[in-house]
Image (cartoon, rainbow, N blue to C red):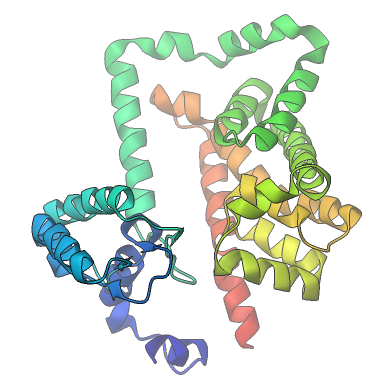
Length: 331
């Protein structure tokens, strides 16, 4: 009812921020798991406090119930996590154990629509950056992080260095390799301008290669990877809106990038529409991230450059796109 009221524009309900934060975390992918055996008619839902504080008892209850209901399923999902760091660890360990002992034929992890990680990810990123800066300065490794040294290392490829980078970036999505390290390397070696050019070309070619593989070569494998309501909704949205669905998912990264490329290959969108929309609407995020990443080596050595501040502003601007889209839908 609260979410419906907010969607209808009746109020922001700022007093519910704490509850919403608990909800996003407790029902997030990290802390949820559904497992249904063959012929399941009864489900054990242990709630939030029991798994967080009594993981052993939770397993014992499940095993006792399973004696009565041999096809017992499990719904490991809570409105909010119990308080205290130990309870978080207990739930994570319990989830891993249930994934081993529940003979499930149907499984999934839950995500809350519109959910996120709140301040956790920004704080985690900030903590990692501070720790990396301290480590680099204390160890004296800063001398090995000179951009000139990295460019000299990469210059061994000569004038074909950009082509090598683009080729690697083209292959990476098809092999499900993360693009983040490649983007950071491109920003460091080629700088904020040419780094954007080469990265957007490579990322677009890689996305197109995954799309074509899914459509013409590995359709069955891709279908097995795409389980859940989000992917069904993506299919229906693409059928109704075409390239606009591609634009939305590129501007607002709600789906894993590599799987998303394959997923679009299973939809009815034409390849030219997909390729053009991918290139255009990945560009804002690419510009922001490459500009920011081009300053990272200097930042690790304790030097704050102009590109760092420009990159931060651009990343903030791109991160506001989901809020602007939500506001636009209301008016």
